[in-house]
Image 1: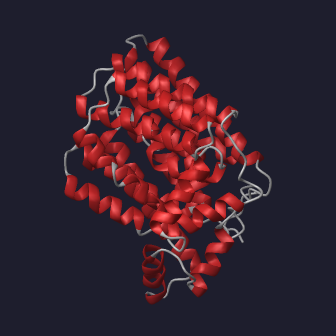
Image 2: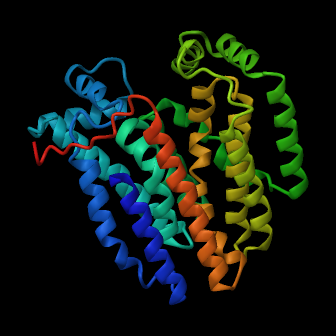
Length: 354
């Protein structure tokens, strides 16, 4: 039950905001949720999270890993900190970046926080912490892109890449948004083209092409090849419930943004984010890990989009129902995450009480 508390509390805050017709003035009510989630993330035991123990070994021995992780770990060691201090500060920075981004770009902060507190928190800030920090910088890049600050956009993307090389997939986003308007016709043409290509299982020839073009020793290519050979997570997920859910959210995004009053640049950002998310996911759906990892950074745009979704209506009861459906979606994802074998999220242990 521990991991369900924050999303439910965030939904209650959202409900109060709907009742009093205030998206911002009541955000202070989220403070207890911030404290609670910081406690869970910063003071978890090394046994909590699938990858946490592995990161302890990385912290101690520095194998081949991204330079951002090495610099952060070296800094903590030089000031006399141990792995607990490293894990705490690493999570705090990752969390802070996302909160700043939500505060800057979201229409309803409580809804963005509600969405983050589900599988984004569990999978990428408790487990895959390097990608969690990379996502924090990607979140900020959405803000910079919307503000037309391209210099800071690329700085944020660079910082994301030095923490997880896969974030390089996000680099073209700025050029695409600036140069191409995602019209309705383009949106539909790209989606159905990608859908047809995914049915032909194009992932394998794409990876083979990249291997020949970039070289088999390229870090991204070698990781993709490792994922291909993974016997546990390399299943074809094209015809899965996850794919159905993603396509449903894609078209909710497509139709909702036609009705929501939002500036054209942000609309373009959210449309391209949704379209590129599903494109990478479908193209590589032959291999589950590759599909989820490469679509991850564009999928984070959902945290911003869903905060605008209640604006499709002026009726409080409909706004409430939208928030409730989002809550159900998040609780379902938490349940699915916790049901994974050997997830190491339960039982939760804290270093404070050991």
